[in-house]
Image (cartoon, rainbow, N blue to C red; front, side):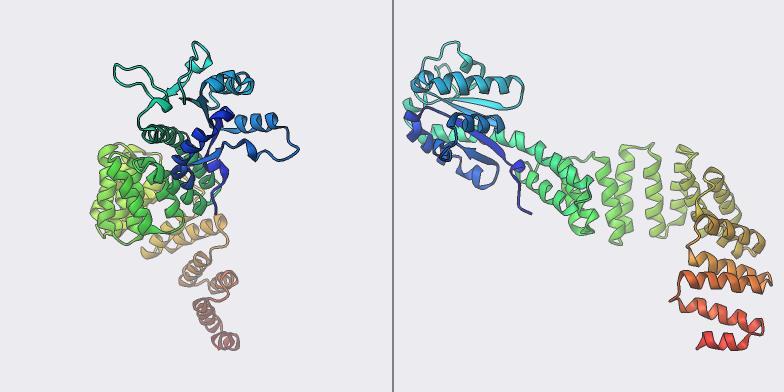
Length: 422
């Protein structure tokens, strides 16, 4: 997408027509910022179309500008438009903090205590020297170059936060490619800002560009090694990339900065599970539950680590606590039901699977598992109904047809079983 005018800083030149040749010389020093789309210039009065009232057009541009440049000369002071209209309007907008105003002393001018004295005035005076006008300098190009550099810096200071806000708005609207484009444009202006590297990383993460996202977060951390969220996102990406040991390192760096954040201990536990370190995962989950004992997810994950360690009774106790804290999460019942099945507590497993189906009726796998439990309990008609329900939810799953065929054979319905097998 092309950049919009909202992504540029608008400059307005106010000058007397007698100074036009000087203005054109100065404008050439801003060409770089213009071509980089940092600034948008409006300076030529001949841009006014025939039939338009020139003063209205000028005021319209002035009122839309972010930076107003006043080119001071004796002719500027004697111009009713420059002095009474442009200068007054610029001061109003400056006072309301709607625009930056910079006065440029083109030619030696007596401006006294006029409104001009309230603005920044360039060129800067030298050490122990009075301010000199541009035309009195021995090297006019150097003076213009210094002024242009100052204008560019002011423009960047205004544009950078605007671009970040535009990127944030695009991100909030889930326009991640647009957000990334704008964040990257902001980073060209100031690559030192760690937070914008992190924002670009978040957009890349949403776009599933994991390696670029990882690089963005590493750039953020190189500039601000205390940015906790960057470590957390880095850890998440490393897990996506199948690098759990490095993910643990990233999470542990975050944990060092915030040792009492339970969610960080949880992330360490998840990464350690991926790394097949179940003892370490259990320790991390236990610390998370100590810090936030009312968080059901932490108890649930602790139960998983205990189950991996074959501490089944302790795992059941952890699942019980998770369900006590959040009795409407289907996944908790499915997992506890599966453990009950493993322990051959089929009636308990059946009860959990039925509660899970009640909470999440479109889950074919849970209906299948319910059917398996019913089969083991000798309730074959009900097992067949459970398998049929699973088949309705996943009609292309051949495994479900095999289960149905097997039960039909047990029930003596051989023709139906054969039809399903075929």
